[in-house]
Amino acid sequence: MKSSLKKSLYVGLAAVSVLAASSLAATTASAKTYAYVTKPAYFTSAPESRNVVPTGQNALYSKPGTVKGARVIASKTTMGNLANSKKSSDFFRAYSIVSTNRGSVYYKVVSFDGNYRGWVYGGKSTKAFAGGITPATTTKSATMPGTTTGYTIVNAAKNTIWTAPKNTQYKAAKISGFDSSDTFTVTGAATKAREGSLYYQVKDDQKPSVTGWIYYTGVQAPQGNSVKVSYVDKDSNNQVGTGSVPFDKSATTVNVTDTANLNSVVNGVPSGYVPYDNDNGGAASIADRSAAATAKNGDTVVYYVKAADTANLTTSINVQPEKSDGSSIELKSQDQAALDASAKKTKFQVKPGDTITANNVANIINDANLRTIVANDGTTYVFDHAADTPSAAGNATPSVRAYYRATF
Image (cartoon, rainbow, N blue to C red; front, side, top):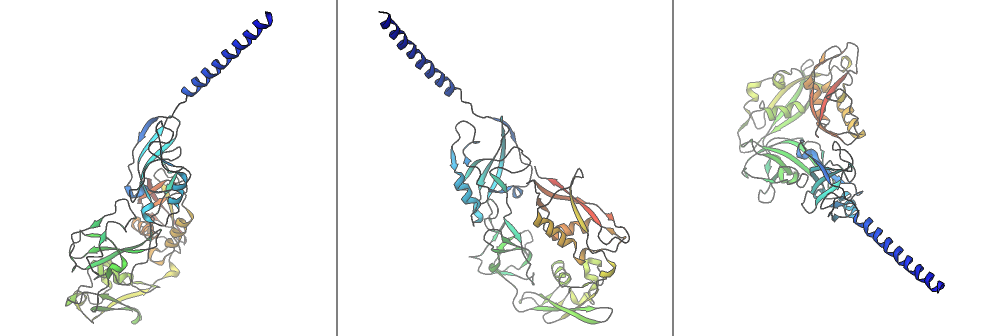
């Protein structure tokens, strides 16, 4: 009897234990918590400064990844493949930011071709892209063509102008409003970072509001007419170099003193020389400005130069990028190298003791193509201003400050 009672008690206790364990498991499961969005943030930077590329470390989700209901849109493997893509259309644009109660930051991004859109983990700070994305450089500066004026579009039905080199910006679009007979001035050159395709930035000479980018084979330099430029050392009266200013074969004359043509002449000054007189943008160095304003095909325009007095100039103007509060910005190695190279160019040097103008500092920044930079910590900055800075007599390597502002 006692034995039977004990067995009944054991069985009952076992049943109670099983039920208790089941209840505990159910309670634990129902207690699972999800993150929730606590704070949206907003971009104040230019859209093109928010181009990013996946790192492959995090997937792309329909909602911030730790929020209830989030589903995978693109796995980490897919994001890794997009990171290593050779197509510009696989870059992304970030356009929304949220933070969760767990301190995580998520960015909403869309691929340039629109095939992928969703949320990706971006680290713990809204001031720099991290985690699943990193800043992207979609184009690289390229060498300008020797001739920059008088270009025409080849087969306008096939070749067109874009707001940016095709697929290098989100929603890069075709530009209209020009005629196939218009002439263009080349104002910039860039290659697509992934494909290496060369594009020229052009401006319509007849309709100056029309400006954009075209694949380099889509335009051709003027055929036939040109004015020869003879660079003459005024002190020795010796010719030290030559150049040319092309113009449309249908025109009877060309104005060599207009801004685009004059810039072409000044940029063509032989190495080791500088314009003899920089007044009026360098036009003062033209021997006969009246004749140059109505030059005909085959004419020669004499442009006076002088040897650069490099022995009595600075050898480098060291530009130090800083934040508005005066703290330094650490550049990536390739950007620092570009800045150092531009800072050593003869055309930017001054006599020790002279003032280094803010405009000169800006020109160095422009020459290095560093108006927008991505620092070592991932923060994007845009050049804001510089100040006139006196240089010390006897100092061949003066330092100046270039102030940048963060785009977040």
